[in-house]
Amino acid sequence: MAARAMWKADLALGELRVPVKLYAAVRDAKVHFRLLHAADHAPVKQQMVDPETEQPVPSEAIKKAVAVDRGVYVVLTDEEQAALAPKPSRLISVEQVVAADVVDERWFDRPYYLGPDGDDEGYFALAEALKKREALGVAHWVLRNKRYVGALHAGDGYLLLETLRHAQEIVEVGAVAPSANRAPDKREIALAEQLIGALEDRFDPDEFRDEYQVELKGFIAAKAKGKVVRFPKAPARQREESLVASLQASLKSRRKEASHGRRA
Image 1 (cartoon, one colour):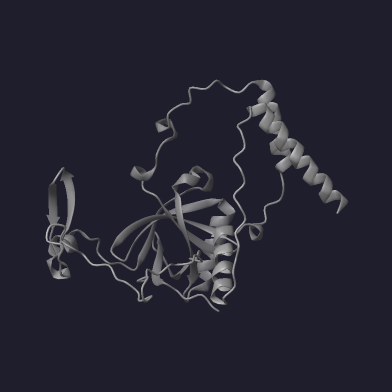
Image 2 (cartoon, one colour):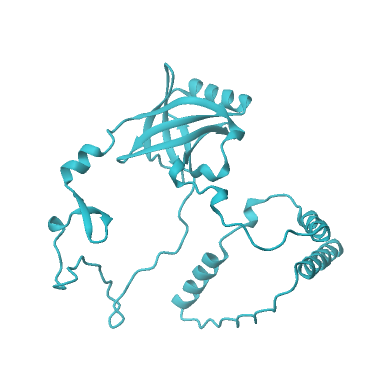
């Protein structure tokens, strides 16, 4: 089934305008649970309740607020929220272009596809230019009352737009408390390098899947048919070993797997 565009906009670089359509590049494949009343399996619903009176509060009597201190709130009216919201726009503005390798992976958030919407020549020319220069454009846009910053780059001949996290969302590595343990010795580093070398392989994304979701969907399908599914016992927790012993065991296991693979 053909993908459905989420939004239409103009991609702007200086005076250039390229009409585009925005498509989701990832989809939600998770199982979503419903809450039921155990007695009759009727779906239940959540209500906003006053904690003192335990009575439901109607939506028109509910306001948004931010806690600025213990028990102290700043309440925003609907008019104030509307005034603070970014103005709607149909423009994805690229204000600068940077080398693709200068943006750390931690900054990338959610990917989208941009498809052409009438000006194929301009669209594919831009995609090819970004690919050749190994560059990405830093883009800004407003969608559904929210401002976004993102990275525009080329992939497989098309344009991709990935939202970027804001600076205040990134936790610098220096904020992580340093370990009080000793540094690894040369033998441990050598064994770790051997293990990494033994694990080196080609990357095939089709091999990776959410095993929990697969098992959950299989269990639900079986239970819907009235089947009884028995779960295996959880393995006993193994005692902790030294780093060297763990690395040696991992190498031995990997070599054994590789040997069996060659025989097959």
